[in-house]
Length: 379
View 1: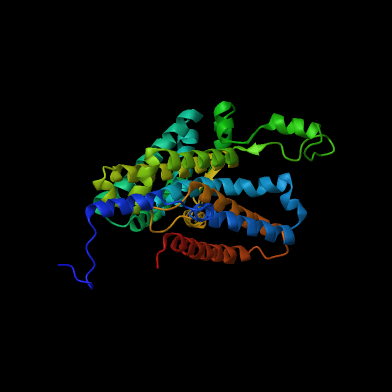
View 2: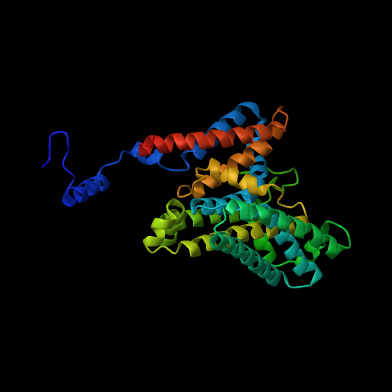
């Protein structure tokens, strides 16, 4: 018998009806916007832009200045997008920066020491990176150790192998030269090096649409290919996350792995693939930078693992997994590039960059947690 002080238990029919009503409940546009992970990064980008508009030299926002900002931001952004996908899937990869150095060694070795054609060297470098990324993933899955620990170990292993390997290959030097000469010319090199859309920029300069030197040469000859890779990967990753079954699997694996397994999601496979993609993103950055520089060295990618994670967190990724955005990481990387380069256009000491970066990370975490709790009603 149910008394006045003991409410009747909800019947299954009432429970189902309540769940249906919850799903059908209208959500305001403001609530939808606030639920987007990239909101904080977009707001941060606006604030940073306003700050530099008021303090920096006007040349910072010229076409040449913007290219100077976007070029390093694009290299970090490629890593940040991959790191964001992995964080949404519930894992970390602290070896991504060391993987840049190691992949640079592998690429340079295939190209310079073994004399392989450029396309074959690039393909083999991606294959090696994917194997190492898969090894990272399998160690995390099979040992059930935190990915933080496993990839921290690989951070030192790969950095050490890069140093030892370069010294062995060069007879004592930590730099391998001759990559530019061995890469040659052709469409493959143009995909991974130099500037794109040079004809368009020449036409724009000829028609006085963009700035040019007195001899008629445009001050900006084209768009660095790393920027195009950055934009393309951001769009592709966003489409995968929001429009494909694989994207649903990534969110599910990071949100609640056990529930995802019970629902038929191949969690282990998803996480392994994400580790492989992160390693391949590092290999891509290595290839882009090594060909442009014409050499590789043991310090390439130093501390990029932390910068990539910071950019992903600024972009809305939660450290607990299951929440985040590739576009947010895109904006986070641009903020990073704008601050790191923008300070050189101001009278501020560039050493303030580290302070600003730490402050941005803390504010991003606090802001993301505040918004999530407001929207979801968490306490």
